[in-house]
Image (cartoon, rainbow, N blue to C red):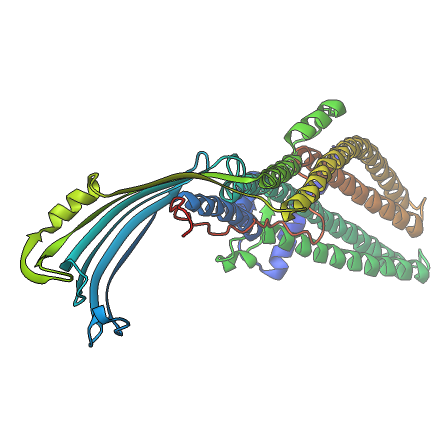
Amino acid sequence: MIVRTLVLAATLAVAGTVSAQDTPSPALPLTLDEAVRRAVAHNPDLTIVRLSTEVDAAHVGESLTAYTPLLSSVFGRSSAVAPPSNFLLGDGGIDTRDWFSSVGVRQRVPWGNGTWSVSWDAARTTSNSLLTSFDPAVQSGVQVAFSQPLLKDRAIDTARQQYLIAKRNEQSSELRFREAAVQTVAAVKQAYWTLKALRANVAVQQRSLELAEELARQNEARVRLGQAPAIDLVQVQAEVADRREGLIRAKAAEDDAEDRLRRLIVDPADRGLWTQRLDPVEDPAGRVPLPDVDAAVAKALDARYDIARARNEVGIAATTVEYLSNQMLPDVRVEASYRGSGLGGSQLLRTGGFPGSITGRVDSGFGDVLGQAFGRDYPTWSLGVTVSRPIGRSFEQVSAVRASVERRQADARVASLQLDVAQTIRQAARQLRSTSEREDAARAGASLAEQRFDAEQRRYAVGLSTSFLVTQAQRDLLQAQVNLLQATLDYQSSLVSFESLQLAPAIESGADIGVHGSAVVALPAVAPRGVFRVQ
């Protein structure tokens, strides 16, 4: 406790000295919670993963467009002049002109994976043909059709496979974001305590330099009075130079640690934070009870996000196996269609022999034509079954074998990952226990080194010791204090790692924390037309 108080007091003293010498901008007091909050809000790496969840959510929306009704329409005019190929066509050929339009809606059904279509068409045709009975002729038709797979594509088709995989990828993205958040928070905590320890190390190095400088002044006075040889002064001055170098290295390490923390929490749009000094004001909470390793392993196996993502990969592989197994079935479909037609316009009345003479006209309006189309005047319907299947080994059969192997691989990866997690948690628990014991030992060593230094300094003051022994005691005290700082930092780092490893793996150096979803292919519904006899 004495040593920790000395280190904290020295930290404040050195902070004031550094501020006076380097004249930095005002320090930003930073608690651990504030550092974590800033990282979650501003860290661009975490933002990348967060946006990836939105990308995969959009993929789910893309996959659902396969079930979106599709409206199609046509409106146009055409003209065709046919050459006179027989005596009935006359000498000038047949001139046929059309105004036509059609509109239809088709959709893939989410349940059963069938498709339906409804369409309506209309046309107005004029012709100079001797064989025509209407000039102009008005036609209209309404058609309803439905196609239902019975084996292949019924339980799962390409559209449903894409949707299921997109949903799995969305879940994996959300899990990856939570995993990245845990890793980012752990990295911030590690950087926070590292900066705290290195700043305290600067204080220790500064205090050690001051002690060496004080000893050098005392030796200089003794050498002037002839009470000590000049070599003692040279020895102490060399020690002062060595400790000044140690202080310079400590300050450089502190600046590096500050930038590492700053990199994690800075808002990229706020450039001022790069010039503002960070002041980690929070002290470690102290010792926590040693964990129950078995309970921690059980929790990790149930709660780790990477295991959940690996299980999602098993689900994706299972979906692929289900899809390809279904594609191996014969393609049997029920096809049904109904069409109502109507015909009207200006009907030509003829008398005499073929082709007869036009004696009058009977006009019927478009309403009459629609009545025929929606009625039962001229019905056309079809109902049948289509069957197709490959002869020999199909692509789907080979792909299903490959997908089955990949599924077993995914299962094996989950099992392997569970073993790695159990080993990692147990190792982290041992690390926490050993660093706790090291901190106790280092604190005792620092206390004893301080007592020895005080005793050696008193002996030197009354002439019972030498500057060499005092210098050695100073070195031992410095090393003991540095060891205590390192042990304290290692304990805090082990505690942070143990807590985070129960939810997410550690970030490896250079690891890419992004996620990559699968692409979704547009799958518009085909228009069923019914089944008719081939002419």
